[in-house]
Image (cartoon, rainbow, N blue to C red; front, side):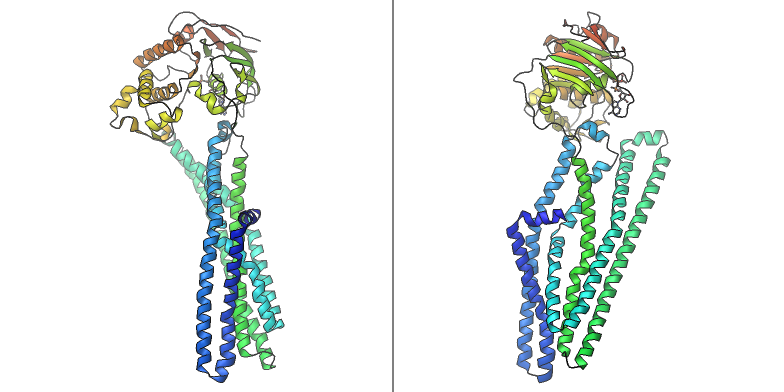
Length: 564
Ligand SMILES: Nc1ncnc2c1ncn2[C@@H]1O[C@H](COP(=O)(O)OP(=O)(O)OP(=O)(O)O)[C@@H](O)[C@H]1O
């Protein structure tokens, strides 16, 4: 309701014109009832043809103008709905794009999708017909007033019918609120189940998850259908009730009016006219239930969209350093993954001067990838600071900070689109020759050249359909496009063939030679030996920075400022 009023208030001029057009349409709507009264009272009793012709032409003109005003107000109302709904839809999608990725991961499957797509319900509630439906409601009083002028007793009958009609609408809304909420919940579950079937297609087939998922789908669908049946039954009940009320009102008006007519207090024409007016007066109130139901659905959709908007967002502003030299410092860093009973690591402190090479080691699950994600600002530490050239990265704009990184995640994914689109997302300013250089350095050029469409080759399934080695090489090319001073490579040689591993060693040597700060996670003994510094995340109570073995492909001198 608040949103409804907000829309009307958002453009007072347009709202005023809609009200004016509605008033004129309803005033003209009275004319057909007055026509019946005049024809029955004057023409039927006196039989003057010119009177009938004049009245008929007059009423036809009134009907034409009424239709015209109704069309005009619908067009005006459409301007109140369109732009606002577009903004809400864009806003919800934008929230998904800027929410912290860790917060998105915690959402139950299907919830985010339902929150964004469910906003269509809001569009339906605030459509042009919905808006004019609300505007029509007060004009019920106009019809009531005219019936009152014809006969106060008939107006009382109409008043009772209107009260019943509004009561039925409110009762329907109260009954439907729970059904609507439960239906949205079921739809979100359905979205999640579809995503599991598509995202984990191979696991479903290989490990026989299909029966479990189908059983879950069947249960969910059965509940959804039961809710739809419940909603349809209630709608049917309401419609039958509205029709019955309309019929009973007619009977009431005619019966009471007939008594008055026999007593000589009311003409037959006035009786029929009052009945027509009563029928028209009930139309807006009979639509009230539909309007309220649409508002309930829209309210539920907006509630979900607002919950989405309440997700923690990546910082919008934030600064940028004039030039990032590549100095990285971790101060007393602690991190606990969502749902984990204890921190992965605590009290990690170290400083890497530009050009240092650090390797993170530790068993599976020790937190190496998590450390990379912390440095990239994708997840937030429980405690401590990450400083880039002495500035806390929380004070830096995330987009700027990520442009300083050459980051290869352990399981890189792509956005569905072409290779070119994915590469240019990382650095839109890089010319085509730059792309080819990055592809060459990452060892992915041969793959792109072998594809008939080259850089325009589409990537689907988030890139997970690409061979793992190819996917990692393409992801490395994308990472290199930033030309960042801090290199974060999560298991750089994993999934690569021998030639790829050699190329990776060469690239590491080259990146180190260029004086970039390098932070790797690796189980590859050659890389561990070659790195200047090592942080073993298995070390308790707190991992300490120490010198790693010298020599090999990526060995570089580095300062040690560990264990603070
Ligand atoms: N987003 C997340 N939600 C819940 N748990 C997470 C999340 N990210 C990481 N974890 C948990 O944190 C722990 C460390 O994971 P991480 O991937 O950082 O380890 P790792 O040292 O890189 O392992 P590996 O050597 O296997 O690559 C794991 O138990 C993992 O399940």
